[in-house]
Figure (cartoon, rainbow, N blue to C red):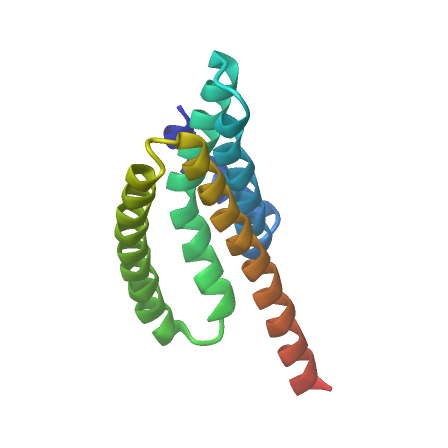
Length: 146
């Protein structure tokens, strides 16, 4: 259900708040959702985690597309190239991350909690980077107009 609703909810959120705000919110929500199984394995906890992670994972594509358009709003010719690079980067890092997590899972003796913690931390770092990138970009834009 999460994967079905993720892109729809993400699209509405981008329309309502902005792609930047939605991206940061989605990364924070996904980080918290990935961390949930590290704290317990009740059915309700796992259902919530699965639904939210599914929604965020699939919903991130329209959010990033919207963010690409926001950043390159005055450069329409560059938008397609940026989207191609974002898509290729996503695929490369998803494969690399999966391989890395497999190695860590094997090395840790099958400790899923470690994987959930690492995944949550990586998503939290991504949220912080999205916040910092927007702040830096905002100050650059202000500097040019001042």
